Length: 104
Image 1 (spheres, helix red, strand yellow):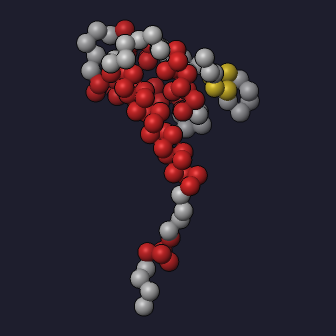
Image 2 (image 1 turned 120 degrees about the vertical axis):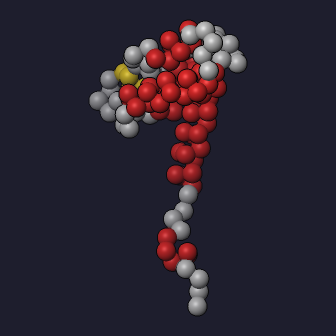
Image 3 (image 1 turned 180 degrees about the vertical axis):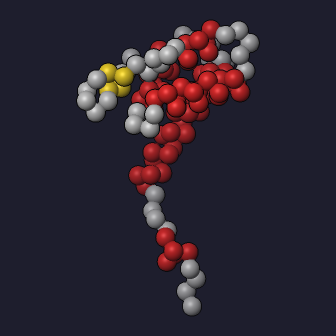
């Protein structure tokens, strides 16, 4: 399983409060419930964590859970969106005001 480290080299537990683990244990949990839990999880890690690495670690940890579980869908969606954001940040160009103005 991958483990994220912070800038000081300390390992970061992907699910320190057990939110994701407990979501997988709740019978009849819905996708909106999982999204709410996911948001709480993400806010708990703050902006400095590598969320993509943490999400990958969580998916590996819960690989034995049913493929149709709503939390798996939410984790995959979060990972895909995060990776898409990273790709657009690398390849994106600034359009700025100059490109937005028509040439006269």
